Length: 453
Image (cartoon, rainbow, N blue to C red; front, side, top):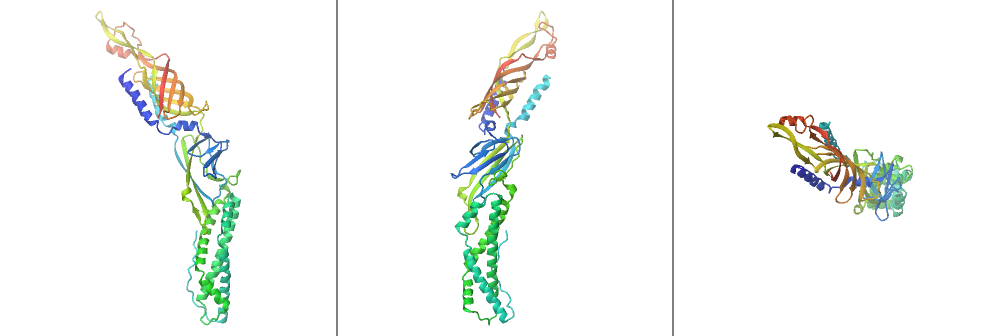
């Protein structure tokens, strides 16, 4: 074994050992939770995020990996959009366990080849005075009395705790959200009607003829309108916020956004799981509540972010790496020497390549049902410069910080041996080099230590 071979094997193992401190994607895939079509998440009273699957799996969601063979629906169960805002964003990247596949194929080929909303305007505007007349004064007085009634109704339209709690509780599932949307729209119309009545009265007062004489009740109503500026501002703000809320409820009332099997489960996202991609979904849950103005107020201190990873299910997970391989094969060497004045071929002992580097492909399964060691099959290509070879065997893949594999199996190599010449045949150095041809060695046992890429 040459110093170059030793150095190459040591360098490759050191490089891949350093890389093994990254996330163990192989073990993550082996330990992933199997899913057919559905994953549900739930926000618990203890403020934790739990998951459940349609294969009876459940647990705490925390960078959890799921495997499937096609499209998956991610739901949030018992979803109340007025109590919780949820967003789900996905990021696709290349499947990590396929990394190195091109290098492995190229190594095999290189070895085989030589061998063979709208706002409300509540600002009062100056309107032109109408023509003076008794009927005009009566009309102004009628609008003022209507506005007095509207002020009373606006006082009754305070957004009380009971109404907010009822809406927040009831708004789950498409049909119930639609009912709450209807109640919101009714309040919006009522607010608008009463605010319009007061606006009309204020316009009438500004444009009233100077000689209009109002009775005491009307004068009291005028004073009431003048003192209701804060009430009008509050209800105008409520109107604007409830219009925004109504638009949001319209989106949540769409039936296709909810599960057919579980009417209170909201569809967050439907990732399409493919063989060559790893799909990471980031879920952000923000608790919130309806305040007294009808606005959805977020609890920023209570925001929780979780991730769910979706990958393609494989019975055997592929892993590419570099292995240090030991074997006890020996190869004949020849030279030309002078005997009785004639240059002849003689033996020059044997050579060996006991330790060398190999590019390997492991096919690993979760067949033992534990989280420590995983069995599998190994294929590999020896990278020894003068003795390329192929190897196949069994492998044990260990989890944990070391993330290494031990493999044992049989390997064959190719070496150069005499073709037409024999020991003692007359030949020059050039004749010997030209006669050497590739031969396949007998199969031999090998032992390999591998680190992942």
